[in-house]
Length: 379
Image (cartoon, rainbow, N blue to C red; front, side, top):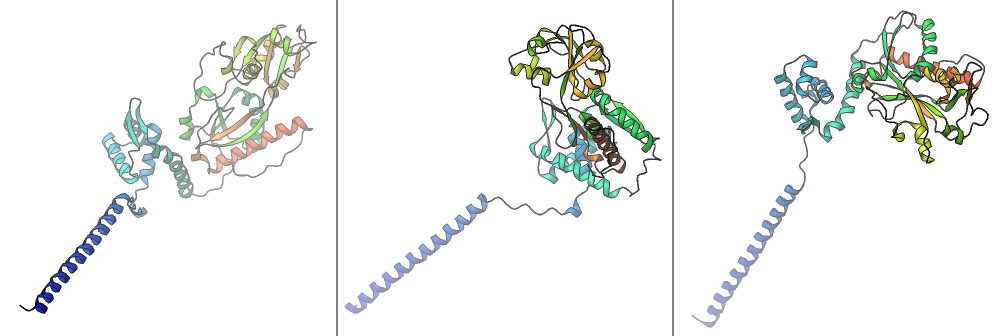
């Protein structure tokens, strides 16, 4: 073989090796790119397919609402009039629909998941809107209706608001029947299900799904006997020397006896004293606002209660009405109702009438009696 031929053979061999190296590099590059793409595919959250509403059974929302309210498959089935296995099957469908367990077993029974708690108020609003859409559109005629309205009222609201409301109803809707319930008669579940039309009370807390509106604000006043040894010098020192009547009932559900030692849990009056480092001596505990004036006739007793009630009871010369000798924050009377009743014509009319009466009560305290025009605002 000549020198040139040998050189040519070496060159071809080198070129082949170089080409093989370049091909291997390109292959490795494509492989690494592919692997990176695969890794990104695993890292990135897959897109959830858009839900086809045509394939969703809207009755499932009704079932979900009952399940979340009852937190029990058997009770939910009984309320809906279906078998327990059928309700269990519906729960499986709901879990698949929302891609969430919705209800999980715990030591306290079935507990809603975070997703279920998020869905609950929204489902109720949707069902309320659907009810409004599907109900036949009929005009509500107050004068001819014989509807029964069930209203939970505190003793305070019954004393200050209800008499005026009943008077207005006698002319506006003479055939309406009112069923007034006490806070101990009613639970939040009763309201959620629309079994109770309204709750008028001083609420410490209330479910977020409820609609509510402020009825009015009120302050506190003191009732004491005109013959009280503290009548001429009604100050904080003498206030604390006296014996007191405690009166209150707020919130919902059955109440139990109070603990006089835990003054912070006795309400806004005792909390105001606690902020001053003071504590009053309570001799009588009552949940009825009709009692304080009679009890305050005793020379050594003082009743501190809402001003509107005190004004109604200080109607004779034997009882004095005084401002408290320390600051007590005013409180709010609130009207609340279920979202299921938000759009009902009769219910909306009653809410408007109650607010109209409340404005009259406030106006009559500030000015001579006058007619307050009804404002057709949809609460």
